Amino acid sequence: MKVDANNFVSVAQIAVNDPDLQEAVSLGTYNGYSKRLVAMFSNGHEHGEAMRQQAAAMRRRAIQKLPDLLELAEKNMTANGIKVLWAETAEDVRNMVLDIAKKRNAKLVAKSKSMISEEVALNHAFEENGIEVVETDLGEYIIQLNKETPSHIVMPVMHRTKREIRDLFMRELNMPFTDDAAEMTAFIRKHLRQVFVNADIGISGGNFIIAESGSLCLVTNEGNGRMVTAMPKVHIGIVGIEKVIETIEDYATLTQILPRSATGQQMTVYMQMINGPRREDEPDGPDEVYVILVDNGRSKVYATKYAEALTCIRCGACLNACPVYQVTGGHAYGWVYSGPIGAVITPALTGLENATPLPQASSLCGKCKQVCPVDIDIPRMLLDLRHELVEKGMTDKIFDVGLKAWSIGNRSPKLFIMGGAVARFGTRFLPNRLPGPLGGWTKYRDFPQFAPKPFRELWKERKKGKPS
Image (cartoon, rainbow, N blue to C red; front, side, top):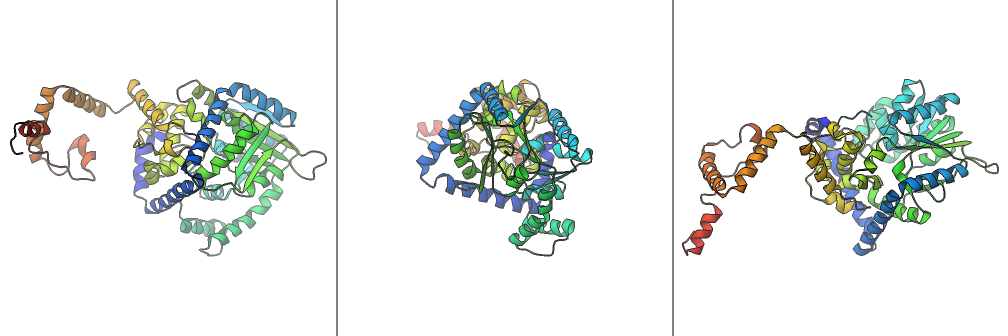
């Protein structure tokens, strides 16, 4: 997927003025945030926080041991009959998948939801090579029909209202008119059945890989995930190298905290542990299973102070909590990963020069860290990225000059007093809106009058016993 993060401000302005998007994202984020609170702390606040810290320790341990765990995972997956491939770049992933597809003369590919497949632009590669690919997750299928990209890590179609989705189905699939969500879902389920039956290849992502058992793990709510990984003769799992964890016990904890944070459920509907292709005594399942371990910049991040971002389990909780995401939606962030974690991952993986506005796309309220199931310190990393922007000269020059002037004025008592006097006098003649670069301050608020006397004068008068 093309990186378009440098257009964040202009796209965000469009989103803020889109009433349908505001309605949809506001409802979606509110539901996600509220349900998480109920599910996470159903056994008490202390229990919920203890579970967060336990999950955080597991992910940090896995990242610290990442090279060794990857080797162990490869060894055990291979012993299970899984063919393990290593992809350094997005192009490597596309070439590997296309090579498998072409060798089997594949015509139809069924996909389960996978953010990393969006990251490496896999669907475009299939289309360019004349291979039909169908997204079978309901939200992803809606996105594919509307020729869009996901706007949320977990709920890809959060930015669309029910009536917009209804109109899309009627327009693209000739669905009879209905306002009932269950009827719409049933219509799509029937429509997708033949895709599962006829698909030559099934492609999934992976929530985790358990190193000690060589298991590819999927955590889903729709039955499409099991059909995609079981019905086609070939299953390809595409997984970022950071998704490896150490033990089954770690998996047991993480699969409790992931659904609580993502969808507000105690447990998801389906939890799969794929341990290889169909055995001789098994009636169904794929004949071949491939797992492609994807780097695509992760090793570079691993060696930096942003390595903590690799512990992310892609729950989307920080998106639902973020006041910026709540008004801009996900597409404004300009790449696969949006919200606070996207504001870190996008510049870390694609280069800060390709995402200069994203570190500023935060109020630094800290809610992203507060809700993160593995306690990632996103605000700290956003501040570090802002520091890098300054160090590399990537910030707005007018803003830099203004900030330096403000700094000089506030460090000098004489200049501070003089500036206050000038401001009290000069602002009497200013219109309600400030001119030039300062106009942003008064675009949506009135400019207040300066106090007739500064605090230091009031304090001196009080000390002398004079009435203020």
